Length: 252
Ligand SMILES: O=C(O)c1ccccc1NCC(=O)[C@H](O)[C@H](O)COP(=O)(O)O
Image (tube, rainbow, N blue to C red):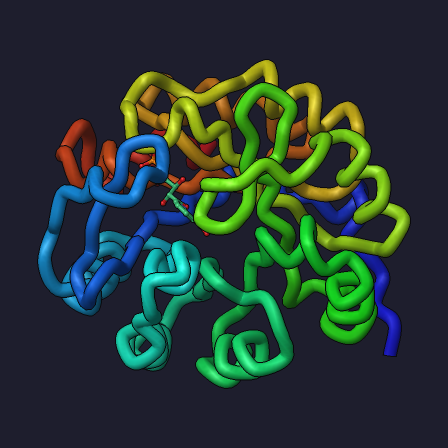
């Protein structure tokens, strides 16, 4: 079956928040600029995920960093965390072929986020988008306007050319990360988000750099332009604000 992408008329009215649990070597961690070796550990990923759920999360952004970096995988943890969640789960990291896609979808996650595959295996991704529709998002992870894959370690082409191709293939949604902001608490790249929204009618999930409730309010002003959600990692772990406060800040 071929799926139709979500269009602007079906966009959410308020910003969705996706607390992040990035898993490396069985631990919930935060990275700076997504760089391997920059980890700060925050303990058991299941505890972290259940904590965000208790705090009212409606989504979880769950990343297998080892799979993204090619240093192994945390499939057991990913499956365990996803199974324990009553909320929607977006799975990311190392989903690049039929086997890794099947394992990810078998967890019961709401959707998967493809990154490297969209840059290196465009024909496979076109097929997967056609087969799975809204269950597939593509992560557009950029430095400037250059995409990066393989755990953000390798260049992978131009953002806007890739976006045009994926739009034409019916990609339902994009998760847009400014790598230079990621894990830095420096605030989101609002210009990038606006530019991507101007280039596509598909919903955009913002990722990287959120540091304050004002940052979330600023992202929320872009909902009419097409920003559907925001991933929040470091700020929650660093206790810059609570998830309850964040949900309240974007609720109106
Ligand atoms: O998502 C991936 O596949 C990934 C691959 C390699 C390095 C990092 C990756 N994801 C990181 C995230 O999705 C972060 O959780 C997210 O951008 C939150 O950022 P922040 O709020 O700045 O901590």
